[in-house]
Image (cartoon, rainbow, N blue to C red; front, side, top):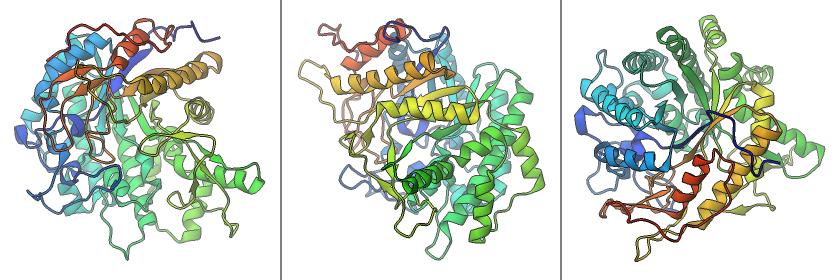
Length: 492
């Protein structure tokens, strides 16, 4: 039914990336130190990135160099225009605008940089979709204030957001507040707490309670920002951004079904609060049962009700499964209670590949929140090989994207889900947020740079570039896997 059917008119085909993964030039233009700047490189076999108190010259900090997009963006945008992107999702590095995060006046050099970037995109007919906080908050706010546990950060974030809203009110329409805020539902992983909420906790602190308080403060800040955005420009659309990960019951046993239900409730309460304006009853009861003293004021409740997000921005990479605990308790712990799905294959980095899960979760989110949905991340990290004739034959990436776009079309055209855009991750190779590798390549454009930041920095179009170019040109009506054997000369 959908094979030769196009997506709706004005569908937003695009690509996605983040400032800290591409810009490099980590101190240029008065930029401050972000949490990404103190994270060292890891690898597929040693996946945990270390966080250092200060910059250690003996260690590798891959976000310091990225892919040099801070300087190369004019030529890279030419490539994005050739690809046919309608939108580019990226982020504004908070530390370029407020280097420490708590200043009262912004850094003009940082504001000017994003003026130039957005102007360059718009000149090529590419609309920016902008994330305000994408794993790159000022490290000063972590060390001096304790991260998002401290309500002072609400004030700082609102100041940052309103500053860029006013500056770019005629250049940016679509905004996202906090990237994958629900990753911290796996609160036992320190890097999730740091990236999402700027938390660095001691072993004698209650990490789950700290996560709930920090997340609450973020969601209040998000609501305040939504309200401010609509006052500055009523045409602004501000989205909540979640990592959408279906958690299936491992079997048909009622106990597994109930446990999977609670798993989904636990992970996606972040969406309930941001998209409906209130906490679910089960979670408030959970706080009481755990004797958690989460500070939720009447003013907070009012802000949450008045500042619900306009749309859901979501990433989709994989799904999980789970089964009931032996002790019978219906208390989901994401770090310990996930199971491998025997029906799915995995990527080289162990991520389960589940295209049908995208259709499933689009329907689930649509039924739950009744908001427009923009898929703002979807892609696969792989080892890519540049051939002697300067080609990258990445049929595996084409298959991954093909199978997921097919399921997106089914969800949209057959099921009636209001999907307004799809920005695949990523149009160009970048530093992986999870491991800090360049070797874990996501792009349609190959960047000649290795895990140590060495290489020519030349860009090369992969086979997947031409495939996605055709998908966009046909508005998704023709997306069968194809390989162009004869390409024009690759760009320098």
